[in-house]
Image 1 (cartoon, rainbow, N blue to C red):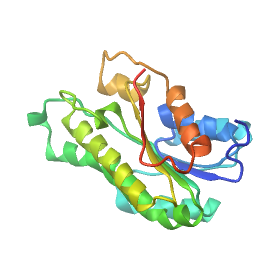
Image 2: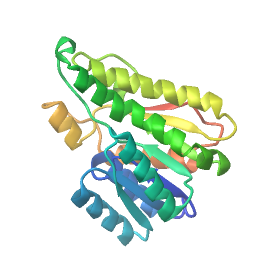
Image 3: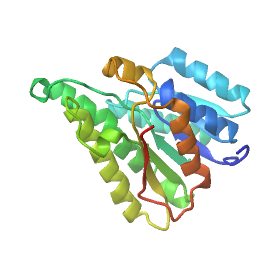
Image 4: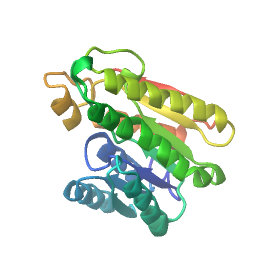
Length: 232
């Protein structure tokens, strides 16, 4: 797969750990230029340093995706440093596990902001690049976007929305930009351990990264609106 993404520039959100860091490694090995977004400067720097050892050109942006001005600033920084992009990987996400009747308005809004609103806002921000350069969009959703799960109402709602956004945009951009989603089950990440203590991971972040690289490099352009189910 070496060189499969040479000449392509990818924005990866939630890149400082877990699935995002694994995707960064795979894309770096494939020759992509990387714009890595995250909230933890130390962890993001470590992922960037690792990608550089793999030969990738890397820039980073600290971005709180719940803050629209911060998101806009990160878009501007990325454009200034790497120019137009070819690949958008909406990976950043958070989970909330609690009874639905106890979810606060603030918690609900935060779940929507990171898991659904930010992907929409980034697609909108980079739309011209993606259409002009015949790029690709990869949304990291979840099995929770395909079915209901007790105590995960906010997360399920947001991820169902992300799957819906994927399918709608795939129709809108058919023949121009493939738009696909990955719907993994439980992945061995800090988010799983912190948000769902005791849950048994079915796969590693590298498993999801393998699917992301397939969608970025090998999947036919006619493949759009798909949701790759990775249930372990």
